[in-house]
Length: 130
Image (cartoon, rainbow, N blue to C red):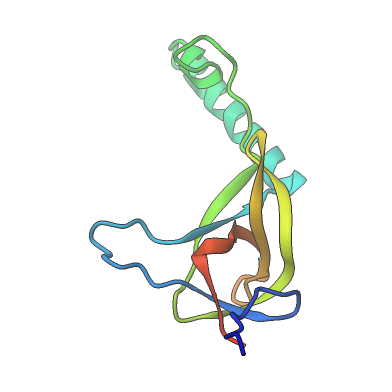
């Protein structure tokens, strides 16, 4: 009889895989999509910074444009560090999701019960608990 490897399934429980060397390896992170309100808040902060720079008589170019002269785009998502001691519920076992301004496959949608956010992270960064 072949040893069955536990698979990530919807409704299952997973944990973030421990990092081998915390001083060298980055912590495991998931990302979540920003709401319309959070994006509007980013625009409002940008407008306020532009008004403040113009009031001081400074150039607002660096606020509105990047080094290549292209306009700054609002963030679409943010990262959140996963706790290796916490157990997460799987909402979707396999998904392809927009990340920034491109699509990323091999993701798992999990529920963070501390914040109530739905996070996306790589399948290989998770361990099945039960």
